[in-house]
Image 1 (cartoon, helix red, strand yellow):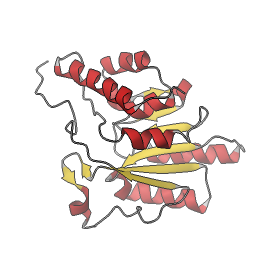
Image 2 (cartoon, helix red, strand yellow):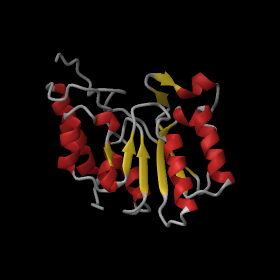
Image 3 (cartoon, rainbow, N blue to C red):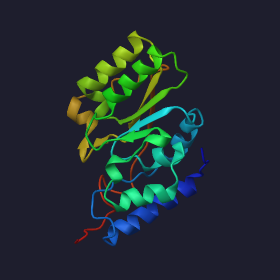
Image 4 (cartoon, rainbow, N blue to C red):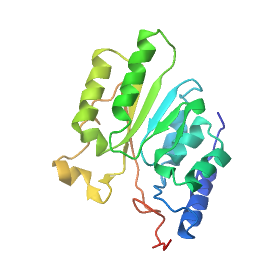
Length: 203
């Protein structure tokens, strides 16, 4: 897999933002910002044969898994920014909240049944991590010791909703229950809004 620096990841997103703001991408985009170093460190432990599942904000995950920039750009220009899937690189993403969480679990079950050496990495936001399906999948993964790690990416928001106020909690429920099945990191998304790149675009 290609190694990236934070500056290279940021540059890719800046290019996508420019394309979106100039109406070259006629579909939603959800851009990363502020979590470059955390993800680079996590991906040091992710191998070519491992599976990566993501949500609507998946650009960095795809790049760090080895998907070439030109291949990604082609799909983003076709309007697939929030549902990038590359079977040959074992990357699956979905714009549906919790959409990949149970699919990742099923992939881990299949790997264990077949005695495979691959590992599954499923990235989810802090709000997704509070849903019932996330809790059930994490519990199942732990109970059956499946080869999967759920990574909670906490920017404290779901769209424009404060996750902690919504659930009446001080911290995400799984933050204090970290093990080989759950990882956690926090970051602040300040450069870009939840969707788009900060400008009103007329197509």
